[in-house]
Length: 443
Image 1 (cartoon, rainbow, N blue to C red):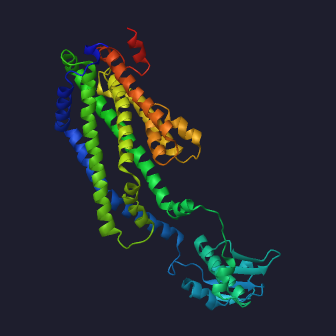
Image 2 (cartoon, helix red, strand yellow):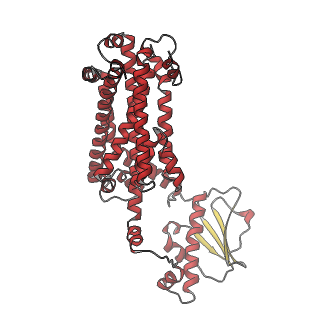
Image 3 (cartoon, one colour):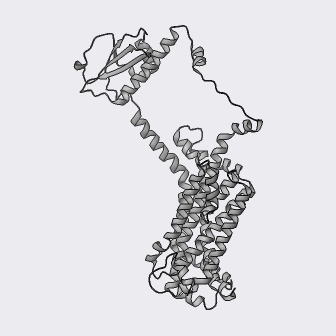
């Protein structure tokens, strides 16, 4: 193997230079600060956004006494089960100002805007309760649903108590009985199933999201950095004293430090946001908004992850990062303008998004063959195999084979870099695509 082509001479110098230039760049610093601020505000935002949605939902589905359009209800009850006005009002006081007319005939064609006919009858299957309104009625659907629901509740209660059943007996009669056979291990696991399932889902979502974020952010940063140096002819100058692999790896490692710092800042922001939201905003509160905000609580997830599991996840993040970053760097070095960067990194983005969605959906599919195949695909396996191994969907043998495949992928990308990187830097013309690299290898 040619030492000059595949060596790492000058790696440290390139790394330090790129890192210093990155933190001097106002755009990179602004992005770092913006991510930190957004993560800190995420908890309060989720709570207040949930509160707005919750209140909007209540407004759409609820009925207030002030807005009630219903004025008169004509009850035609031929079922034999007596429901007094007091029974209905005790269920919902919103109807206390509505006039109820028991068994008073009313023609449907004569119904006014605020009038309803409630028809209660016996059928072959049981009982039927119908609400009838006029063609010009101003009563909305929510009012009718509430009337039918409350009347049905009062009707059922009176029907059962009329035969001597009290509430406790009624509850016992209608309660279901389930049975199953468990081993002691299964029984103990089932008691904590919900918490474990939520923790696994949290690990899966968080891991795939972080990996996707690391790769996509770094791809953009690496591509822009490479293009800037190519446009200024700095890369060609550096290649006189720095090995090709060292030149690209120095940039990749520098951008990895920047991206990881951004991720650490985001996680720190989430933890601060979680602590603040739990302590000062949602403490003692109930409802969908509180539940949404409390989903940021990471205690259960961290309790499930052992130190070894964390090492496994981080290792696969680094492998996927290296493979995609080297590919991005090689392709970006053929661009002469920043405008070409988007098209160049589309291949990396596509691979990343495929891995992300496969990682998310494969965990939801309880098929061993799906877990095995997804774990053995280069790069995509980085999204699936570590989490699948941690939760027990694949065995140790498949996991180690997946790890070997990902390592071989990284080594291949490094070999490809040493083979074509210098040729790509001096390439003139349109930016290269993935398959164009194999053509350069033959030259």
